[in-house]
Length: 582
Image 1 (tube, one colour):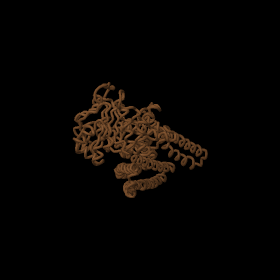
Image 2 (cartoon, helix red, strand yellow):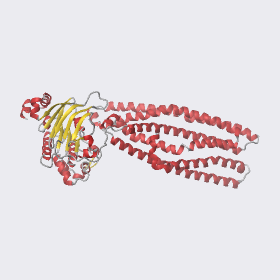
Image 3 (cartoon, one colour):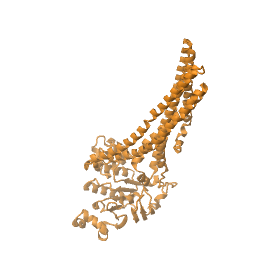
């Protein structure tokens, strides 16, 4: 947790003033029993009404000043804690955004969501309570002890016995509950994962009629979470009875010893009342300290989890300096003996891949499920770094480019079409922030999306729901293709992004892309990943992958004659007559 305190740097004044005002409030609170003693001894005993009123006004004044100090402390503590969590959350989000796909795959989305929400909130609560109670509670305990000794040493010995006993009860209960609270955060990860999986995969769950099974899985996790919370609750429930028993026994002892001291004339009735009040103050301060310890424990556990994320350094280093001036001649993309293995995988996803893609070419990539098609194209924009070998773009290794420059050259359309809540125009401008209407419409034309966009109410101002849920799968795919085309990339990667399109629309899309990539001054290189042999058969070069190896490269005709894997794929989708006719 200490590593995270640097996020309080902008709130040094608030961090100092919050506990300071709490100390002032505690000081006024310690004076109140003495005023009460004066009212009893000098006012009530002597029947002095004006004195009672005067001391009553003093108590009201002490209460008002204490309230003002408390509110001021609350304000500064809340401001510092909120600023702390804001800075922490912002840097955590920025750090997560800097991680490569490799680290994101290892950590997992559900736990990242839990940490940036629940764990940050726990850390914020811990900071808030520490600023308010860290100095106040010990000050009240020590101050009340000192004040009791100034009243009567022999009676104050009871305080010296009761305070350690109450502290021991609190310590034992905290020792039992602290490990349980750590387990609570882990269970939140599981619940977050189950919730996210069911939200994202709701259609699949319902299609297979597995709602009841998923509900049962969630219920089991929720029951376990409840069980852990109940276990902590049952132990914590002993806190008040255990401490109050000791306190009440101490008060009985104070009244008994104090009564004898009053009989002997060593103490007054007001002083005995003050001693009882000090004992109550000590108990309340220790209970507040116990709550602080619980909050700090949770905050410490959450802080450790947050530090785990910060400790994950991205394997994708953006150490390149100024932008590279690329050469106008030469190949667009070159793979030289490239191999890649996913984290915690025993076998490589790609092995010894070498090929060249020229400017203006359409490169088709085909292969069975898990053959490495998506992995291959993900190496071009440096979503992952190759384990060995070199990936070059325009004559330079991709590692030599600043990431911003490299990815500005490339338009990527992933397998899963992702749109964001907002207008259709806003989504198109993700590709190019200052894109004009003409540029957007041209991209929509190429992506075969303009026809349905023109029919929508508002056209480019039509609202897109979160994730594009108010669009069909084919419409989402065409819009994500258009979004990539708006920026007029030098390299376009279509990662099986036309799977929801019918054959006629798919063919029209491929024809439009070929027209856009052809001709002087255009020369856009297109990587077309597809499961359909018909979709890539017209490509200038087809790469055939099988279990991470490049088993064939060439045109459709060349591969039919020389690549058994490609021929098998074609025959699995088309008849021999159709294959021969292509």
